[in-house]
Length: 336
Image 1: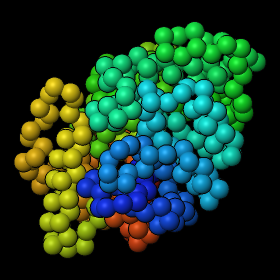
Image 2 (image 1 turned 135 degrees about the vertical axis):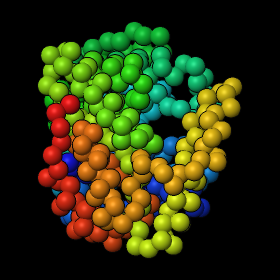
Image 3 (image 1 turned 45 degrees about the horizontal axis):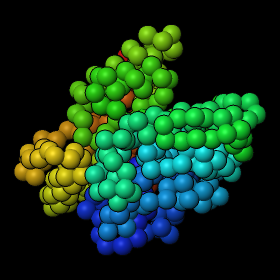
Image 4 (image 1 turned 60 degrees about the vertical axis):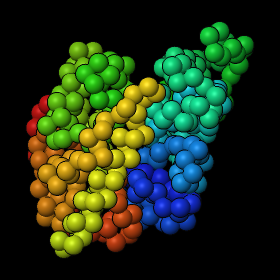
């Protein structure tokens, strides 16, 4: 099992999701993570929040590329409907060149209504715009020489996208999915899979199995390492800290539910009153308790865990690297 980080830097008032903090400290945090053996950082992209959430993930990753040498630089995710596909293809390729081929490109269609409204893009067009943007980006990276594109949203005539990415034919593409149909599409397209932080270990096991089945159906190796399983992390040292961690987890779940509501729906009302004490998705507990949670996750087939750290400091990274990681890296993962 290997471990990466998930979240982002932030400037502004306290973020109720608790996944980020100021840029200078966050950059130091990522450098510490690389030093301590973490494999990656996946940055979020959000807009118009009023709470200072990271909006320009590729810019920050470019800075991190100069501050690091090994850690993978991921997006989770770039929301394609909001971007010019050619400009985005150029920016991603440039980052891949600057980083020496360390980009992991997570992409998605978006889910926050206010962001679509503020960009003046109808949310019902999200999937269509996402698909065409990805089509143009793939053409940009894989077409020898110049190409043209005549689509519904984008028109390009006799263009060439430069530079070429360091990773060929392009950086690995990651997509978030949770339904059997969505996971099947990701596997059938030969993309990597991002799983959310709320699913139980049993649900994670089923989703990894569906993904590996989809790879095998296309004649590809069954590879659970291509699935990034996001987990909330809160290391505690006493019972008072446990109570605070559970309260923070409850607030995180509520906010995720509020943000995930679709137009015209009431959303999942149970999030506001959820009893998360028996929650077995988040990694809340002492180092020994988290080791047991991760061993169970490994037994479910998970090989790659992305940590949304409630306390993103060097100290928590050191505790994880010293007291948790050595007991998990050699865990036996069953064939899925």
